Amino acid sequence: MKDPEAFRLEAVATLRRRVTGRAIVAASGGIDSTAAAVLTQQALGERARSIFVDTGLLREGEVEKVGAFFRASDLEYTVVPAAERFLGALEGVVDPEEKRRRIGTAFIRLFEEEAVRFSADSLVQGTIAPDWIESGGALRDTIKTHHNVGGLPKDLKLQIVEPLRDLYKDEVRTLAAHLKIPRADRQPFPGPGLAVRVSGPVTVDRVAVARRANAIVEEEVDRAIAEGRIARPWQYFAVLLPVRTVGVTGDNRVYGEAVSVRIVESIDAMSAVAAAAPWELLRTIAERITRELTGKVSRVLYDITDKPPATIEWE
Image 1 (cartoon, rainbow, N blue to C red):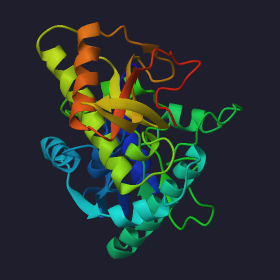
Image 2 (cartoon, rainbow, N blue to C red):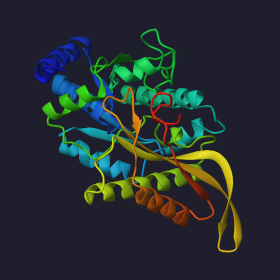
Image 3 (cartoon, helix red, strand yellow):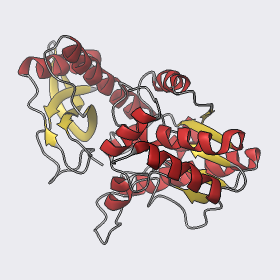
Image 4 (cartoon, helix red, strand yellow):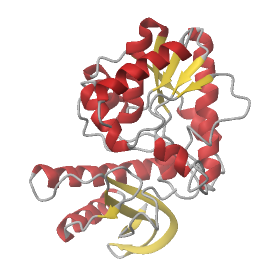
């Protein structure tokens, strides 16, 4: 992006032209949707409402952290609690693509309901180029369906508006800085949330395990950053695997699950390199996960696969 102010002016003009009534904005708290929300608020003022959905698939403290981030960005927003709806939609589902489709449908149905309450006919999303490219755009195979692209139902009742559609992640960050959106410590987080970091069945208990393991990874990496032991990576998280593995606690046999830790470096999310994390950092993470989740997790692995051939997220 050569001129973020020129982009802002063009995006605001396009939003005003396309949205003649009211709009709601799908605001996840990530940098993409926050930039889209701020642009929409600038363009439409009180004719726009940003919606943050508590899906029950968020990380520890996510609602509070996102709220603080929105307030620091001068963004007006509404929180909609919907954990029961989303976890219910995922009951018995193990296929990653089906998870994403169901989550996309659940989001849209919720936004349609909120649009009726707000008398809106448009939905603004923070879709960026990698989202639609990986979802099968640009004559490419579908790498993975992004819930805000391929997960949209065919009987959608809202006009979809995507002001950032042609930008890549590094360009969005440049735009966000220009919009005076604070640089958040919040790393990229998938729209489907922990549903795609819980490989296999998504249950309340398994989400809780993944949430705690993920928090441990973030806490230990953040500590290493603060102490100057490592530079801040692009993304770092935990994935709960659909694998049972034998372990030992004291003199007792434990048959728990396995967690994979993922730390990557990237610029635009189109490619990534697995980070050479310090051994002591990985040992500390493994010790904390197996200790704090005793009886639930008995093995911790480190993912050293680049993108490609892997994607950053497991599902």
